[in-house]
Length: 370
Image 1 (cartoon, helix red, strand yellow):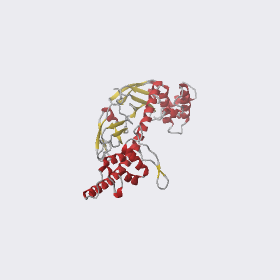
Image 2: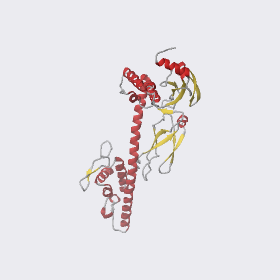
Image 3: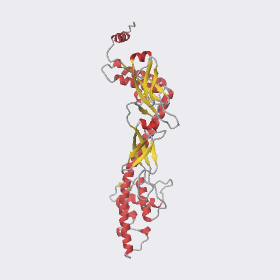
């Protein structure tokens, strides 16, 4: 279901009376009787009813607000992880280029020392024409990168351990954008290893992937296999508390660089489309079609659940905006329990017109009750 606040056209801090008035106005506007030429009127009317059903109940409204806030946070984390993965990919390519240059310089210095032409200390190794590792980085990536690498190779540039990112003008006078902290960390790490000043292996960047799972996988807490870009296969065991948008951290399964501790893998859960159930947080939603007589008079019906078919009671005078909630038949939550199965009722007419029902509706429309 779309955002109920947007559907009703009210603010998130709207009072109950304001929500009720908005629902009545919207329902009157989109009512199928007023839009007989619009085939989507029935579905829009039902959607408006569902939105009101959520917002009129204080507890359901709180649950929705919490779920919406969590979803927004997850989306922000997912976007941040995606951007971090792109930066990591670029940083890895840059780092490999630096390592290739430094390896050539190291080989040249070793050859010179063997021939007695140079007695330079390893910590003062240089490339062609006396080029230092930091100068090499500056030549490849620009002056800003060289300054940042020099500063970072000696230690954190700020009290909080984050490298300072400052723009610096190039030879033409135009400002170069600062390198991302991730790239500087990689480059500085390579420089420290090349100069022999790294006390211990550092951690490579984390990478993010999308883990597509089924509703059944989440219910049974199955293990799924993730195919990585480097042709590795990583096994993710689903746990309680995982649902759409959850980000699982697999330590040591991320980016792997020589001489560095492997980064972590951030797997974002995405639930594939299911013909029976729809996932909303830890709740599962399903649709049940009911006849006009059951909607008016009430009755019993059988509905499919994750644990087999169950009989439910349909209250009298149930419209397409109402639901029946079966507790504890949803996904495993992070508190040791389970969400609910929410049965959304949909009133359907008979396949063929019924004259008696048609006459009754006509009398009711014109105020003639028989």
